[in-house]
Length: 356
Image 1 (tube, one colour):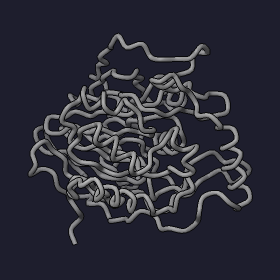
Image 2 (cartoon, rainbow, N blue to C red):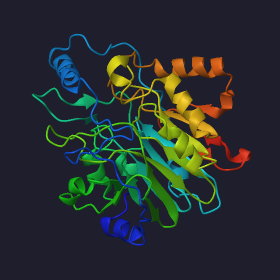
Image 3 (cartoon, rainbow, N blue to C red):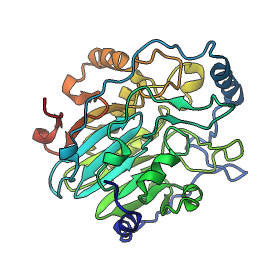
Image 4 (tube, helix red, strand yellow):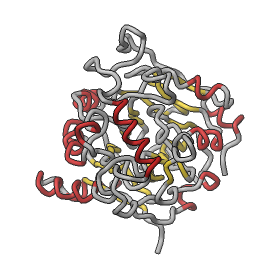
């Protein structure tokens, strides 16, 4: 059951934004840029033509082989009530970058895209269909206290899902314009700013990426990731990001991250994608820089967005894990619909698979 909009607004009414002196970097035209001063990736126009031509003709581009991510039926009875303060957090993969995060008596969504397809309809071929069902359908979600959105790309800011959920939204500067006409309350944050949702601290942190929703709003909405701090767990969701020095600073500012939710897909062709996404090998380097306890893989096996074989990312992740000698239990590749239990104490780091 979805929380009525009025209830959701009241849930965020006590939200307080902690302001910092950080000056958000922008270019001379007022568009947001990354920490290194770069904006939209070079060659973007050519790459967009290639991808659009592939969608129009069905020739070239992303390979069609490979199956989607594995799916398990969610434990809806478990998810119906979030854990209380002091109890371990729960993290359920909804597919792609979407998660249901439950801790300290609240339920949060991060980057939910739960419809049958994403993207604009361009000449009838712009939509990208999902290859695996959503981990939890919208109509079966528990009451949601807030939705966290990392940036404006269609696979992360899915407006039909947000409208159906009806909960307040937390995102970067520029998010409010996308919520206003849909009667959704939005809290906008700069990098390193913190808001609270019923006592849970949510900090918007840098990522190396970019944003665009239309041909006219490139980098007008700030992109980033989220650090979620509860009484028994600290979680980090990177959003989309290339490998950059900011991971080390995030780890230093938030020591003891219990689970880092990191993307492992959409990395080919590398010459273009490495400016905005990470390969599985790079994601493990980011994990090391963050000094987090557990790696949780995301951003693969749901939508065909790039040119690597669809089911290749987890194989490459496992090969690199073995090469680096990282303990197998520290690297988690959940199935869509699977719930992981996350907490500060080692005995809280396991999983909650549906019975049977």
